[in-house]
Image (tube, rainbow, N blue to C red; front, side):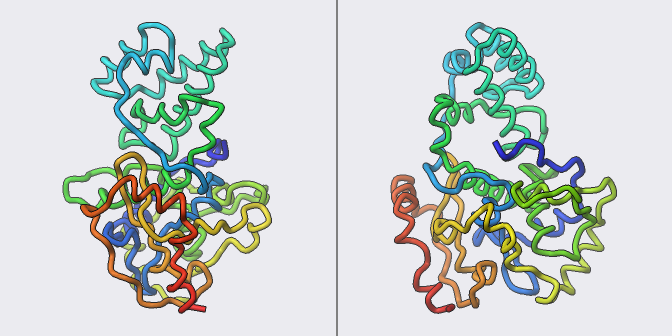
Length: 318
């Protein structure tokens, strides 16, 4: 999977916090002096090379018995769940189990364990960075068919939720795959953040691998000052032209509607950030209310995304 080896060693907390405090969950976008901008499905596809075409990810509570049968075929899974005080397992425990499965040549168990650990370290990372919910096992129950899921959509929905939660007064720590947000900032805002270009980078790799995050980050105050003074000439709206041969633009990236992971619904409204797709910005529609959303209708709209690509908005902008 493309996620291997592209997590930044150091998080630029000042840079990320300055953007998070400008995020509006009602629009899934950052409100900046140069208009709204946001991480889109195209950004996820280009930065991480995750699938944005496919089935939306269903999640549900996984009981002890199913966890035991999916991760390891003895009583240790139940013991681990009890020790973790909830429906989650430690990443360190998964690493030990993975080694055992490889030594015993239990390849399907090893594959599930490896994939669960990988997403727990990246796109579904929690605040602790040391555990992952076992409900994500459902995505890898059939390792031969797990490619049917649009993990790029799940990663974006999870990121929207976590960045939105970071604005709450009760939240004291950033959560989620911060490499996704940080690399997005690096691509679109070349004057922000202390990044280093990886000299060995080739365009056949995910664009997030183009950058390294140094140990010394930015302060929240200095990023706030730079954001307040931001002008259009300091923003790269469409940074992936040189990357299109490796990662083409998918029509689903201008899908306008709800995306989800499990029961978590998030708005994906590319018509609010048309400049990021090379179009002139028009006045976007009002945002719908989550209480009026039906999961089945959401999935149907996603599967028939050609009917929900904001054709009117795009046509008005050309």
